[in-house]
Structure formats: C-alpha cells, structure tokens
Image 1: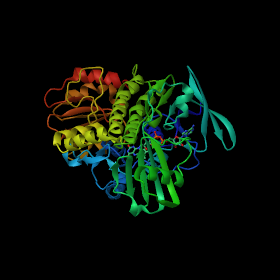
Image 2: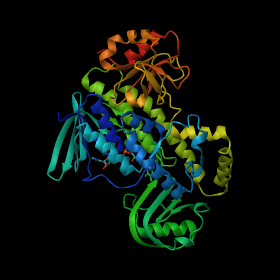
Image 3: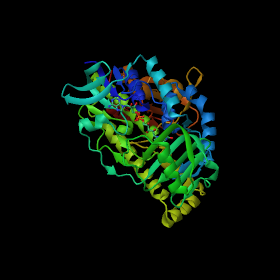
Image 4: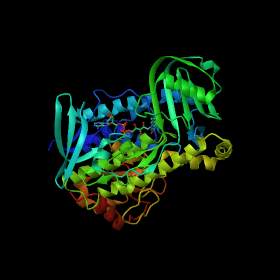
Length: 494
Ligand SMILES: Cc1cc2nc3c(=O)[nH]c(=O)nc-3n(C[C@H](O)[C@H](O)[C@H](O)COP(=O)(O)OP(=O)(O)OC[C@H]3O[C@@H](n4cnc5c(N)ncnc54)[C@H](O)[C@@H]3O)c2cc1C
C-alpha cells in the first residue's frame, strides 16, 4: 500500500479532504494530472458553511485578507454586493436569519493556494503530473494506474477518493451511475483586450440571451449555439460570434487572457460510494454555477467524508459510519441541483420566463421571501437525519461559531477550539453529568467545560469534526441517554 487513501485531484475539494483525513489520523496521498495548479478564476467565494469549516481549522485570517477585495470585484462585475438567484441580484446578507454567519469572498486560485499550504503544513504529499487512467478494487483495497512523465505506475491504497472534477475519470472507471438532465444553456466568458465594448447594450437579460460585462471581461448566456466540440477551449472568434447573436453588436477581441465555457448540465452520482471508491465535489455532482454553490457543496462533502473515512481506515468506525456519507450529503447535493434548474428556467429568453423573473424579483423585495432564497443558496438550513431522537433544535444542524467562556474565565469561539479536527464536547459547569456520560470516549474527543454566551437555550453540545451538532442540551439536567446514543453512533470508545 502506498497510502491509506489515494485522493485523486488537487482541486479545492481534494486538498481539503486530504487535510481532513490527515488530521483524523489517516495517511493520504494526493495525485493530480496537472504540473501546476490552474489559475482559472472560477469561483469567487465560498458560502458560510465552508467558510466556517475552514475557520475551524485556523484558516480564518488567511481567508479574511481577500474578502474586501472580493466585495469590490463583485460590485464591479455584478453592479451589486448582494447575492443573486438567476442573476436577480437582490439577496441581502443583512436580511438573512443568521446574518453573522458569513461566507468568504476569495478567488478560487487563492483559496487553492491557502488549502495547499494547509496540507503541506500537515506533511501530506501531492504528486503532480500523475494522471489516473485505470482503477481496480477488491475486498482488501484499490489500485490506480497512473500516467506520469516517467512512464506508467500503479499506486495502491485502502480507499480511493475521486475529487477529480465534473468529468471525473474515477467516477467513470468505478462505474458510478450519473443520472440527471442535459444542458439547456451555455455560458461563455472571456477576459482580454476587447474593442467596441462601448457599443454593447446595457448588461443584463436580453431577448436572445444574457450579457455580462466588466472592464476587460465579457460573458454571455445562450440557450442555443452550443459548440460542436465542448472540450475545445473557447476562442476569441467564438466569443465574438456569441456576442453578436445575443446583442447584434460586433466587437473585436484583440488579445485573450483567459476564457471559460460551461453549461447548466445537472447530474449527480446515484451513490457517493461504491465499495472502496468514494466521490466528492464536482466528481459527485455537476450543475450550473448560478448562485455560487458548487465549491461550498464540495468542501462540505470533504469535511463530512474525511473523519468518517479515516475512522474506517483505522478500523475503529462504528458500524455503517462510512455509508452515512452518501445518506447525509446526497440530499444536500440534490437540493442544489434542484434550485440551479429553477434558475436556468428563469434565465430562458421569451415572455414567459420574463414574466416569472418579474415575479421572483418582486418576491425578493419581501424580507421573508428574501430569507427563503438566501436559505436555498447558503446551506444554513441543512439538517441531517440522526439515528437517534433529535432532542434539541440544533441537533443534526451545522453548528454556528459559538462564543464560549471557559472555566478559566477566558473567552473563546468554537473555531478556536476545533483546530485539532477532533469531535468536541462542550458542557456548562453545572452539567458534570455530560462529561461523566462521555468518560469512555475521552480518548476520542476533546471536552471543554464552558458557558455558551450567545445562544439562549444551549448549554451543552457534541460537535462532530465536520461541525454538525450531533447532540445538544438546553440548561438544566442533560439527556445523557441520547448523548450516549450519539456517541455510539459516531465514535468508538477509545
Ligand atoms: C464560472 C464558474 C464560477 C463558479 N463560481 C462559484 C462560486 O462563486 N461559488 C462556488 O461555491 N462554486 C462556484 N463554482 C463551482 C466551483 O468552481 C467548483 O464546484 C469547484 O471547482 C469544484 O472543485 P473540485 O475540487 O471538486 O474539482 P476541480 O476544481 O475541477 O478539481 C479537480 C482536480 O482534479 C484533477 N484531475 C482531473 N482528472 C484527473 C485524473 N484523471 N487524474 C488526476 N487528476 C485529475 C484536475 O487537474 C483538478 O486539479 C463556479 C464554477 C464555474 C465554472
């Protein structure tokens, strides 16, 4: 065996998964076909759940450095700092139920650099120019065949995690079903030297498609005009033709800096695990980037999977733990595909979609509706089914960054206490029965005696490594029977 887990793909999801595996005690190895990380500026930020997950690992400061510039870039490109549903930029962060739970604006290459540094600090290798071309698995492990500049080699591990993007080779080689809907629209984006942009109409929704412009950048959304070869890179000529179809205006593209073409194809792997092969991120689900959800979704796959797979590899996972990965994450992915399909329908040209857009735009002026659309996109409404009674409102939900006063009198946030990646049990000094109930698990979790300062009705919580509240208690005598059930479900006694 070369590693406990071979992670295929050093994109953001593969990098974070490998880091989570390492923190939880496994030995991962990351492979990527590229010689260098790509500088393609795809995502411009991550949602609150992924941002909180990274802050829990001590990456908050690094993320924060990019946020102000991200806000300025967003205002420049979209004319607004607000979030959007189908390019209707009205989702107001200040109107949301938990406005303090914020995402982080950061261009994807900067995020990948931060994640790669985090991974390096944990001593996990990335083998570049290693392209996976074949895969086999049996009861004892899995082996990938890899093409490298020095020739072909075979790499074996207990498990293989396919984090190799939307066209995932691992997904295809392992035989995952990938059902969904075919593309209805194509987006083209070009950055470069473009002359004649001043003749283009106001950006926005036009009868033949959508136009987006910023200094040195143009983009279109079309519902026909698909390229013959979708794998071929977008050229200046193709961009010029698309702009002409959408606006009737001819521009000249003198120099191309970078281009991007993608569709709203929406597909999801039927399961995220087949034997010893798992999928995470775009390898498990593809959809249109409308609403900026893909990276958030993929990074949350990674934090959900990391500790479960590490416990499985080490042989101390409770029965069925690894299968809760698909059970918990598949419905979350399906909900994202669902709302991106609705956004595609709203972006179609024609009087019917135009009428619907007007109605959705009016709805977004209502605070309750604004919160509804915000919740669709930010994932804060996620709630996992638990295999025992959910006896508190927070049970099964992503834990907010609690403010805690420790027994020593010091103030800390949850993020301050979670860098180790271990499960965390917090309880009020008046609830010693909580610590007693968890005594047999003391070797597998961190315990903090602390008072929760900012959440009435919460005095104790068991928080999984992925930030999910596994169990929680209101002030007063704690329900230790359910706590014990939760500990059995997620952790083996050390
Ligand atoms: C224009 C655009 C804007 C977006 N905006 C947002 C946004 O604002 N917010 C958001 O949350 N999401 C956004 N997304 C989505 C986000 O970019 C993706 O969800 C994200 O890149 C997925 O990360 P990943 O690690 O799963 O896959 P990828 O980033 O695709 O990484 C996959 C890696 O696997 C490697 N690889 C592939 N095949 C092999 C192989 N056979 N062997 C070895 N290595 C291999 C690749 O080289 C690559 O490094 C956007 C996407 C686009 C296109």
